Image (cartoon, rainbow, N blue to C red):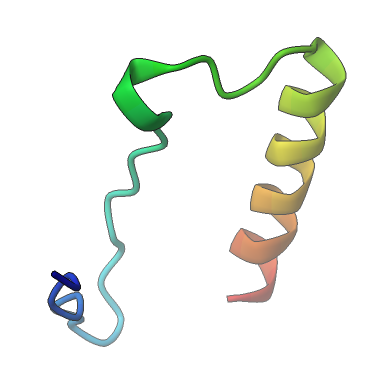
Length: 47
């Protein structure tokens, strides 16, 4: 079953949670985590 769309209030921040399936590891290497943080930061600045 598909998830319902997020409830968005314009101009209000959203809380984002990053989890792996069944609590699996998401970032195997430090470089993966740094890449994720860099892209997240880029998106924050853009939007």
